[in-house]
Length: 138
Image 1 (cartoon, rainbow, N blue to C red):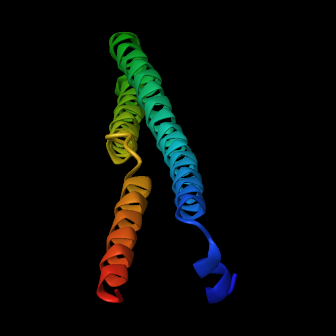
Image 2: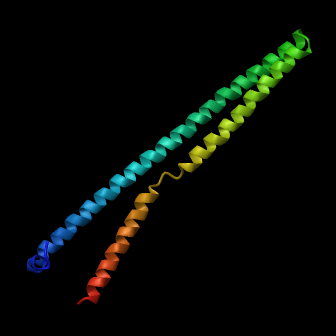
Image 3: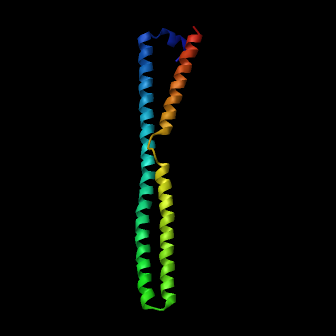
């Protein structure tokens, strides 16, 4: 659109164009916010799954320690020592998985769309700058 065409447009047409552009901008920002929240939800789901794995590993560790106690009573020393080592290793693994799961869930919280919010702030600043420059050229 040339400068001459812009000058020949009525105020109502210009207001309508601005309204359409603002509406399109808001819709685009909402799509971005929705996509960002979905991504953070996936990350939280992965962290929660790791917490579930932590429970399984802790249960298996406890079962191995129970087996260790049984073996310690029934068989010579090396067998229960082996069961003790396995049980301790499973509990250590559970601790590592729990720490990773906690970090994943923490990284996804709070599930607010920070990129979309920053985009809207940037858009508002651009509009303010445009309005200020428009007033300066009068």
